[in-house]
Length: 155
Image (tube, rainbow, N blue to C red; front, side, top):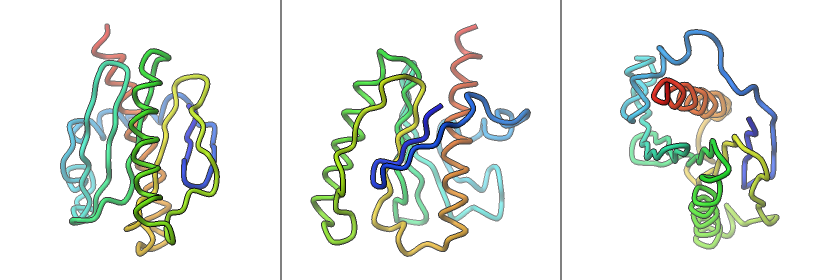
């Protein structure tokens, strides 16, 4: 799975499945809610999730501040609608906060699926390096869990 950060252009090729047991751990977050459901020490963080067959958009918040928004396209048919929403948000954020979030390059939709696109939001800039690193892991854990949930639902 491609893990693509639109703001920076960073692309990482990740496995298409997460570690064993991840789905069972993450299942309480697939409809959103406090990350404290999974890791009590992280109850300050919550996830909002919107899903459709083969696609998802989710945001991670700390308190009232959104930190990242992620779009997951599992099929070529869902790639365009997910990309359209991500690109809209990316351009809106960079226009509203040009000093902090100026687009330094044109983001390009990945050609193959599955992919996870990530938009870093302005409030992320005041978080610690540990939180920023942890968010990257959480993004992938959510993506892998959504993939696993799609497979289970389509059996």
